Length: 200
Length: 376
Ligand SMILES: Cc1cc2nc3c(=O)[nH]c(=O)nc-3n(C[C@H](O)[C@H](O)[C@H](O)COP(=O)(O)O)c2cc1C
Image (tube, rainbow over the protein chains, first blue to last red):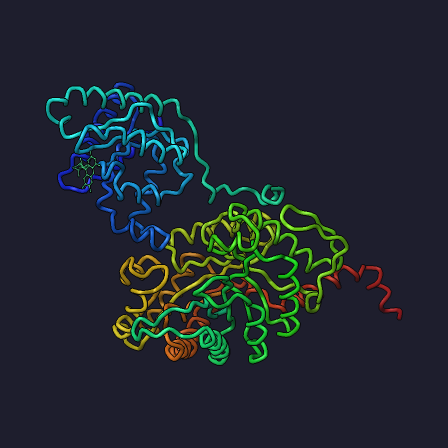
C-alpha cells in the first residue's frame, strides 16, 4: 500500500509552545488511528517559526528559498494536513497566515485538513469556525467537521475532555483521508495541450 | 549565442546619494545604454513596457526607433511586450514599422505583465491573462503572415478584410520569444509555435527555471519543431562586477538592500545563492553564466539586467565596458566550443529570410521544371 503522508503545520511562537504540544498530541492520535488500519504512513512536523524569515522574504521577492520550497512541497503533496495556530487578537497569528498566503491558492484544493488552535481564553474557541474555517474554505481544502481548540485551562482540569476531542478529530481525519483518492496533476509534467488553450 | 542587456526602465532613487533622476534623464540614459551595448560588442538591447510610475518605457517602439537610428548592428527587442493588454493589431503595425526602420534588427518578447491594474486601465480583466495571451498572439501571427485577415475572437472587435500595414520587412515577421516566469501554459504556447522561450530567471531559483525550460523543450519536440535540445531558449541574469569581488559587493550592497522587489528582504548573500544574481569579479560572472548551460542545456540568448535599483548611468556604462571586454568574449568562446553542431543559433531577420526563400524555392521548383532547364 502507498505510504500516506500527514503534514503538521504549527505556528506557535514560544519555545516550548503549547501550540506545538497540541500539534504533537493531534499527530499522536492520528498515528494511533492509522496504526489500527495497517496503512503505512509518515508524519512530517513543520514548525513555521523555523521558516519565519524565509516566509517574509517569499512575500517580498515572490519566490521561496530552497528550504522553504521543500516545506511547501511537503505540505502540498501530503495526504492530509493538521494545521495548528495560537490565537492572536481573536484570529490565527500572522505567521500562520503568512504561510498560507505563500502556498499556491489552488494547491490545497480537496485536501483533508484538521483545524486546531490554542488560546489564552476558552471564550475564543470560535476562532476555529470564524477565522480558520473561512480561510480553508477559500483554499478549497476539505476541513473535517471537528476542530480542536485548547485554552490554558484545557491543559489542567479540562485535559480529559480535550483528549476526547483530539481523538474524535484524528479519527475523522483518517476516515476522510481513506475516502480521498484524488490524484493531483502536475502542470509542469502534464501541461494543458495548446489546442485546448486555443479553443478556450 | 547572443548576449545582451535588458532594462526595466525604473526611476529609482540612488540610495547612496539620495538623488532621483528625472524621467528625461532616465530615458536618455536608456538610449545611452543601448548605444554603449552596441559599442562594447553586445548583440541585443531589450526594454520593458510599463504603464505606471516609477517606470518610463510606456512607448517601446518610439524608444527603439530612436535607438535604431543611432545604432547599426544591435538587435532591438522587448522585455516584454504586453500581449494581454495591447491591441494585437497595434503590435503588428508598430513592430513591422520598426522592422523597416531598423532594417530587420527587431524581435519581440511577449509577456503578460505583472501589474494587476494595467488590465483594467486597458479595458481587460487579469483573470483572462492566459486566454488573452493565447488569443491575441494567434491573431498577431495571422496579421503578420496573411495579407488580408478575417477574424473574430472573444476579446477584440472582429476584423473583416483587414490588412495590417506596413507588411513585415521582406515578408518575414519578427522572431518572437515568449517570456514567462510561472505559467506552464506560456511554455506550451512557445513550444506549439516553435517560437523562442525566455525564462526571466533573475528572481527565481534554478529548480523552478529548469522545470519551465524542460517543459518547453519537451513540448517543442512534441510539436515537431526539432529535438528538445534544438529549442530556442533565452535566460536572464543580473550582475555587478569589479576587479576585486569584495569591492563589487561593497559598492552594490546599498543598491541591493534598497532595490525595488527584493530590497529589505533577503540578504545579498542569500539572494546570490538562490538566484542568478552575481556580484563579484568578471571571472565569477563568467563561471556563473557558464553554469546555466549545465543546468538548462545549450541556449541561444543571454540577457543581463545592469541598470536598475538607482545605479548611476556612469556606473552602468562602466559595467557594460567590463561585460563587453572581459566577460562576453570569454563566454562566446566557451559556449561556442561546447555547443553541439545540431544546436541552432537564435533566428535573426537574415536567417529567417534565407529560410523563407529556401522554402519558396522548394515549393515553386518542381522536378519537371528542373528537367526542362537544360533545354533552354
Ligand atoms: C499578540 C498576542 C495576541 C493574543 N491574542 C489572544 C486572543 O485574542 N485570544 C486568546 O484566547 N489568546 C490570545 N493570545 C494568547 C495565545 O493565544 C496563547 O498564549 C497561545 O496558546 C500561545 O501559544 P504558544 O504557547 O504555542 O506560543 C494572544 C497572544 C499574543 C502574543
